[in-house]
Length: 412
Image (tube, rainbow, N blue to C red):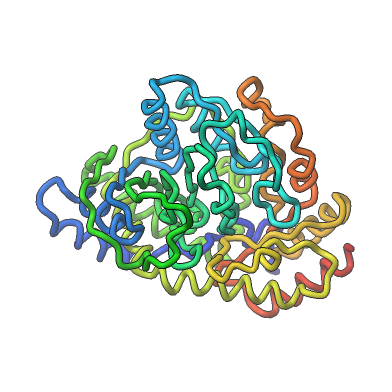
């Protein structure tokens, strides 16, 4: 039987690639050498050193880490409900975490050319401001310093990106948040972390080397010890992730509707999870190769920027021109929705891994109805209809980029 490329090939192949089961086993062995019962603290210590934070609090997912962050901030405000400002065009999981923590959301408009929070938006009603750092592009935090807001640097998609010399999540905000799930910058078996402890000065501490940080003074976690059967199951899952990210195999799970690959979920009934030892080992395996993974993402983004430079498309990565950005997807904003839809359909038929990303602004998710204010989000709504993202994983080659260029040229 002749081989036919599946239409969803490469759509969700991981950002930086899963670690091999062998790398995870090596990391697991290093955790086993920790004093009895302290494997989670050992993992937290590695993260604390990398991100220059005195406190690292491990959770079962990035959503759980965000929820814990918002809950802690509420505690500092006598438990009253807080208003959290965030980009109207961002992952709905962020909004879910805020709602589960008893907060409300102020959706802020975005700049259609940079995908950052737009200039001049009104944050006077906000208690907290969250930076989404969408796709790994560093939002401008400097302009919000000194405004009396609690700042949260969400590095779930941007854990490998820098702002100056400081890693995102560790550049002077009150809190940083990481996620270790499939498709994130640190692409593991699940889990997340809340970072805190760095002082915020008048500007981002770009003169600090974020890779050689202070030792962790404290760490906490919601962790659970797995039995042998559960760890073997996790190891088999890591093997499946590692194998099926290959372009010629990825189409197999992508065709299974029950897996929900490519779907955007917005579930207010999410139950908090606990981090397992195998998940911690997968995090350490990823961090061991973080430098090469970041370089690969940066190289892919630069290659997209160069080959698409003559097209009449908005390229936020190119416009921001931040040398430290290591995007897990390469965003493009088309002139109109019809052009975007035509390009997306053609690229999917060719198996080239394009995605429309999030389908709407936060204001328009039915599950979030009644929890989101902020109606002046015209640019964000426009972006949601015109954006397309391209893969930056290790399997994208020059031939893929040339085919992508040719397809987009025909659609605009």
